[in-house]
Image 1 (tube, rainbow, N blue to C red):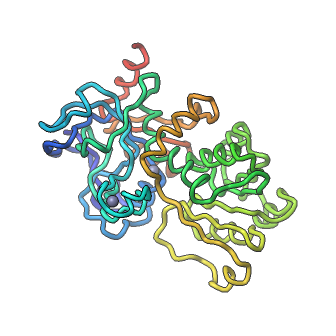
Image 2: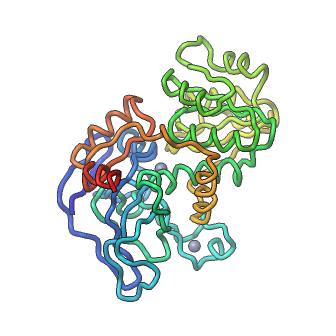
Length: 352
Ligand SMILES: [Zn+2]
Ligand SMILES: [Zn+2]
């Protein structure tokens, strides 16, 4: 199959042929129609690998596709069914999985980090893992659900438990920030967005942000945030993983506030422990989401409670993935989607 292979950080992915994935008796083989490019992929390419990563590896964990082939013991799926592939494969066996805390699974395998991911034509996963994509949704929507939307849902409702009237500042108006914004608005929070691109901030405004701030256009970000809020924030959510925005986030929090870290990074925290203690700040990490959040997100889409119409702003064939990566790097896109079988596959889907 064709695949984009990650060998080292700081260099382009190499496009080439690799063996098709092996399909065990309990596995399904999925032909990948869409895989969106995530901030986490960009971190590995531009900032360095995660510990335990063993290149060469195929990145990409926001996958939707069609069942191509099933293992001899598989009863649950048939070839031709459209599916969402959640970003982490959990074991269903350990105490965490059995107690509905799958994000803490002891045997978790992260697609595109621990095992090969979606910037390729095919992936094989255990048959309990994929989730049926309702026929009315495009594959791109499946990709957005697989990680971004369920991740935002898990962050806002499970990890942070945002409450009505709370002042929430989100640093980063990318796909994840804009998804969290919408979840926070469902809780009737006051939501403020900070970014360095006006066009992304106008999207945030359109999606219901109470006010927005371009931190490149003000002398001191923290002061401008305080002016915008008329005080300090109850919750600051950092989606970028950069030391500068982490500092801005902690400086914008009121005493007793919650600092939420969700932008993947290998950097150490850029502030003193005393800041956390003195101000009684709660630090909350959030990554991914259990697979069972998918139906909840599908309900929100069905009810028109969240708007994803403008989240995908660029599309590329697999052979042009490095071009897609550079649009992401330059801040020219919200979500970029890669089409392993070509953009032609999208047009055929649209004409059906
Ligand atoms: Zn992701
Ligand atoms: Zn487990």
